[in-house]
Image: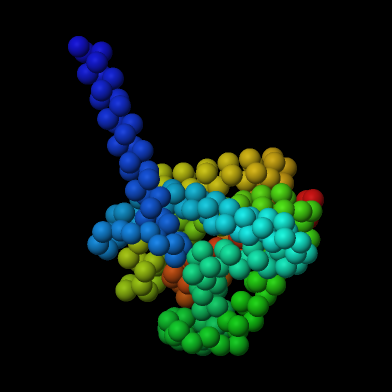
Length: 267
């Protein structure tokens, strides 16, 4: 009887763990994409905080969308440039240009504001300026060029999966290293993730990079991701004293580009 009770308790514990994990994954997908995923009521701060460990898994999904688009375009005879453009376009559709919007707002705010208050005001404006437009053009152009330079759909697909997973895994780090400077913003409402959640996100990111890129290329990609993350964090601290949701979007874009360039350099 005792053995059956223990086994039953273990089964229930495992079921709760799996259910909780998928719940966190659903919340992470809602926060990071524009996929039609339903959620009853508003997402609580506690749910947002718990979901960060699933960010790299969502990134893998977005990368798979891009890889599928690249493969489909190649299959119908499109050249590498058109296939790369299709892949980047597919990932933008999957995320609703969420991170690109953040990058543009950061470029406009940091480039056009005279002081932190002015920079934050510009970032909150939905209109796009010259700095933002140029940042978007450069981001898309560099990513398309990097994918087009890779040796076929297999390498491009692996690069996309790793880039999106590592980029999402880097986001929670800045959330614990800096303070949210816009009290009413989405970033502040998401709360500060736990150290365990951040560690899990980083571990998952590293595993994905090593598995899909191999140990050497994966290590290079992670190293460049650390550099890109550090630069964005230092810039945000200097410009506005912390981070906003837009800064998180700019961080994702920067790390994504860093990983893609690492694969190009290493091939």
